[in-house]
Image (tube, rainbow, N blue to C red; front, side, top):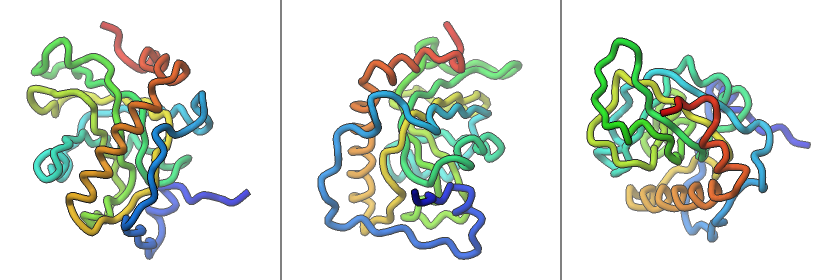
Length: 196
């Protein structure tokens, strides 16, 4: 059995290998993972929403919520860089103003990028969560709770912004179809999430 380098091991390298460029990719599967989440999943992550690079919504049209660095150890120590799927919930923090509607605090599907975003050449490891819900405003000052249930694909670089956007759209379709199985959909009710 070969060892897959974890995200933290990749981050610790003095010289990280360059991500492969996505050119002429073969058709991608519609569903990833087994019929039930397989170790190391599920992985639970939570913390206050962090300010990111603001490229997800402004440049790509896919707004993301960044998890804080100190919340990432459960996934960076057990999984490689790449794109993941699962569920997420935004939750009000004690003492902070509640700027969202009641419906915005529900649990929604998500896709998450864990890594260095090679297209943008990030220097630091980040976890950026794209929640599949249309929020009316940003939610800094709130907590994000995520349950990561599976791996979609490795990080890639792209020859164009349009190619990256098309792959993100595919990631979303794959994530939604992968969640549409009983063992996965049941975890939208995990104890991690606040009950209404």
